[in-house]
Amino acid sequence: MESTATPPWEAKKKTAPRGLLRKVVIWGLGIGFLALTISGLQPKPIPVETATVGQGTLIVHVVEEGKTRIRNRYIVAAPVGGNMRRVALKPGDEVKAGETVLTVIEPGLAPLLDARTQAQTEARIQSAEAAQSRAQESLAMARTAAQFATTNWERVKKNIGEGSISVADRENIELAAQMRDREVRAAEFALKVADYEVTQAKAALLSLTTPGSGAVVEVRAPVSGRVLKVQQESAMMITPGAPILEIGDPADLEIEAEILSRDAVGMKPGAEVLVEQWGGDIPLKAHIRRVEPAAFTKVSALGVEEQRVIVLSDLDPLPPEARLLGDRYRVEVRVEVWRGADILLVPGGAIFREGAEWMSFVAKDGRALKKPVQIGRSDGRMAQVLGGLEAGMEVLMHPPDSVVDGAEIVVKVAKAE
Image (cartoon, rainbow, N blue to C red; front, side):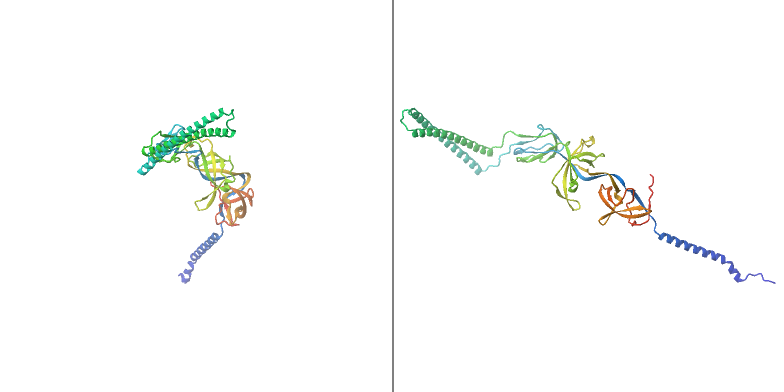
């Protein structure tokens, strides 16, 4: 009789299919992980953006800060010395030529007088009066001598025909009469001088002992416009020529800009200027009137010495919204210095410096090829190509650091907005 019990080695054989499946799964996972690792280590195409090199028009502008200023400014100064009254006008007040009284200047007060100064002044008066008396006596003596000489000459003229006097004596007597007449005129002039000196000495004493009196001087506006700046507002003793206030016409504006000398060389009178950042949305138009011939040195914010030139521009008729522009307002000027038509252009973001040369990456057959480029003028957005690139080439825009010569690339597809 045969036994139906299962031997132990047969029971172990039944578990074999489960162990084989486990091994297959483990090996499969290992192979898959290895494949993923190998795939991850392989270089992937770098996503980039491209632009096309093409023909176009390039306009190069110079952009600098500037400021408005009134073309003609008038500084009103004191015409005489004296006590100036307080100036009631304020900056912005309107004035009319010959009508608006800016201030009034009164005669100044007499200075303090001591005994010594008074005695000296009185002595000058006495000296002048004595000189006056002496001049009067001299005049009387000259007139007496002249009368005697004239009478003697008249008597001699009557006896000329009788031959009682020689020719030489006759000429001497005539000359003496003429000299006496001239002495009278000289004495009269000397008396006038003495009179003036007496008057001057008395006036000096009067100015020392009596407060100044007389007509006041009204300082009127020389031109029509507005007060720009009051330089001396308070009442005070003022000297002749001292500045009082400044007047100008805010409607008569010009633009002053400090341009680098290398850029100013390309600017010519009459060139169009766009005035931006003045406070409005629409740029204002102006034209260059003058490029000053002398430059000056100015230190930039970075501590670099620069040679700059003042360029003056005349504003075209202002729109109504720009009427509020005033003196010394900050603006930004944009001046065209060069224009080229139908030239080869490349975007500025597609070129970069490598040492002393300009370089660019060209996209060709899915790879980036580095090329040296010769660049001409640029407006900051587009650059003139003088060599190295041709029209129709695709160049990489702002290539990342991972892009090298021969790297595999893929062009990004622009998303539709």
